[in-house]
Length: 402
View 1 (cartoon, rainbow, N blue to C red):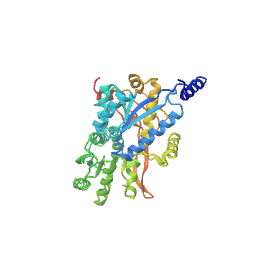
View 2: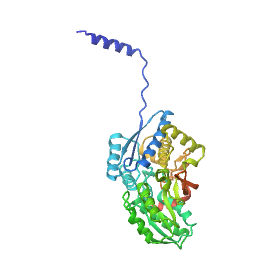
View 3: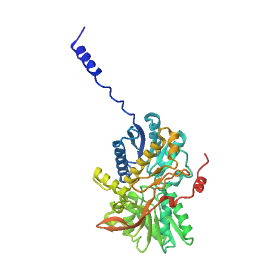
View 4: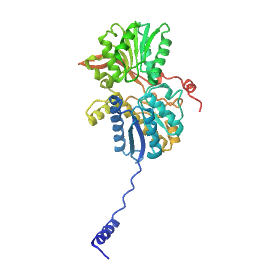
């Protein structure tokens, strides 16, 4: 029986038959990203804004050969077990081409092993432990940021110029901290053999008991302190140290402490005269960085942070690898990452070395100061990461035989 509905449907079908066929939508390239968004939002939220900015720019320009990039993002809760579960979902269910991200080094090391076992490319964007590209390195894992060894060498270069002989150490008790301390000791002794390390404090990450830590360091009577704490632990350490006079007439050399996500929360309480690695975004005047900073501020109404830069450079790296590979095949992407050049980064050009899969992205080294009630970096210089890496031959010797 002919009904009113069947007449309408037939008419609609006839009309559609005369319409031109729509061009098939290009299948997106899926990338699986994770980070410790709830555990350390001060760094990871700007990081997400950074990669999102780059993603929006790339997709607005047509993606990769007309294919848009789709990022599936998850929170790893700063737990290696959660990171592995998410990575398995990325590979088995979401069919991503690349896994990337991670903040804490124990998470990065877990993903490094996952990449090796599942033969999927992994870009460690923030984890800094040296093992990720050296003792635990593998064909499928690459790292963006300058490692603990690289940044420790940058700082040791400056520390060797000080009169200090007796050094004390404070660092979080996990891979990032232990690697940073070992590298700093080795690099400083290489440059100044008469230094002495008189004691160490190893608070658990995120749980520093600042009073006892500061008292223990003071009892060591060091000339100088090498600090590796960051985030809320750093703030507690600085405030307790100021109260107890720990930093009076002592040099302090401090990893990452010039990054605005850690320096700005201290306000006028920020330390002055510490030698640090960091990110003086307000004073970098290259055209590439200015374009990035202007776009970031226009998009989010705030200045970029170190995390923002890492996130942006991460997406630039992934896009460069995908374009070079001309494919989403895992083996083709790994081959493309080796000796990959990223020429237009806001931090300056860098490449991923074939020998150990470490990028040559550098860091800024300078001193802390307080200006208008805010902590900033002064007397800074950009340290090219390539200048603080072992030779290709030495790097290969540090990696397991595959």
